[in-house]
Amino acid sequence: MSSIVELSAVELAAAIASGDISASQALEAYLEAIERIEPQVDAYNEVLTDHARTAAANIDAARAAGEPLGPLAGVPVAIKDNMCTAYGKTTCSSKILADFKAPYTATAVEKLHAAGAVVIGKTNLDEFAMGSSTENSASKVTHNPWDLDRVPGGSSGGSGACVAARLAAAALGSDTGGSIRQPAAFCGVVGFKPTYGRVSRYGLVAYGSSLDQIGPMTVDVPDAAILTGVIAGHDTRDSTSANRPAEDYLSEIETPIENLRIGLPDEFFTDALDPQIAQAIAKAADMYKSAGAEIVNVSLPHSRIDADADGKLSSYAVACYYIVAMSEASSNLARYDGVHYGHRTEEDVEGIVELFSRSRAEGFGPEVIRRIMLGTYTLSSGYYDAYYNKALKVRRLIKNDFDKAFEQCDVLLCPTTPTTAFAIGEKTADPLTMYLADIYTISLNLAGLPGVSIPACLGSDNLPVGMQLIGPEFSESTILRAARMYEKISGVTRLIPEIARI
Image (tube, rainbow, N blue to C red; front, side, top):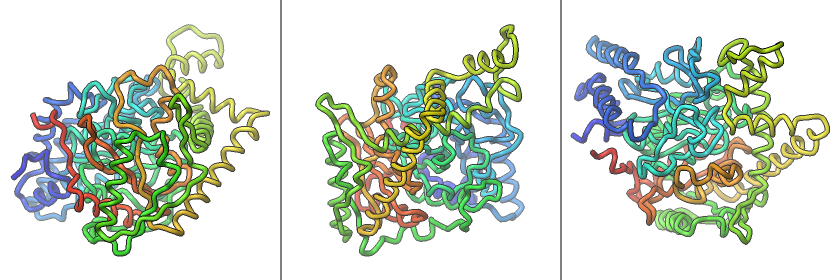
């Protein structure tokens, strides 16, 4: 049998259910890997050793007693530290919530519990999920397991890194503008963002309420399918939750899609794209064609990506996204005032206004402050129509483009990122350059569509290259089956960095 930590979540759950491995044995294998590798990667904000051991022991006791087990019974899963849990801390990697203990557990995490998963820890992220490299964390900088001098992506960089390094069998992340898919691409794992509303946002600390969505990060597509099936479904506690029953995405995952039509968006294949990534996507399209798929060219004019003479990128979608996201962030983060909970200044202050100001200035990091200020500006009197309202109109045009494209195809195939993982510190001095790391992912969130990033290959620098499949609303099954088709015809799956082989 392969090393326990090299098993997929589906395989591990089956081994535990059959009694070949106990849940406690599986957990201890991951805890040993964490002890050995985590100091180099820094993926976790908190490893919940005692909680996880109790949960694993309960799974073993239930199996011994002949009780029915959930589909993820005994599988160690990590949780991005912006999802509330009634155990451990929920910090959002921010000083303002450094010691916050949530009084309840997020719906998606509750569903993991019900499925028998063992929550092993809370992972690092860009503060309040605002970033593309996990360098904005007030906790630490997470390192890419493929190259410790490079970023793992963001904002779910801790979740991506811990799955890639086999420090958890799977993880949950959140995706506001690519925060699951971009780190999945950089770390060589699968990252799936379901349709907006498919997974409850109850208990997810809000960044951009009309954009945020929880999803899985896994070693292969079947794992993404089983986790999505577990966490999806209607939740009356979330007013934006879609009133649709959960589906068994795993049951048909191995069935190829006949007469699959794959669209290639013309606007995504410009000089802005790293040539080796363009070549990888073209090769993937050829593989699909050889497997019987039809390849068609489509247009997404309002998501066009251009590069100027200096190589700097631009896109309507980027401008639209950052106005909408920052406006919503300004509103959502107004609740952190140093009074009800969270960091409160210890300085002597005169009046409530100074208390708010000092507490927030001390508690928030530079990127969060920047986004709050920009969002407040775009919502202010005199600028609301010029910026926020106009952005909403562009958002509608972007959604219309996708709707028209899906009249010609079943899924879209495109890059996840314009480059492979960049060096730590390379983009921190230029926020705009950092924002453009998500240039291929943000239009999906604006349109509320599902998308998955899967490894296409390893690049010339031995870093993972990600490719993205996008579908219409609630086409999760189609996207996952199409992604699984690529895994099977290419053989590119379950990539393991050298650090995890030690």
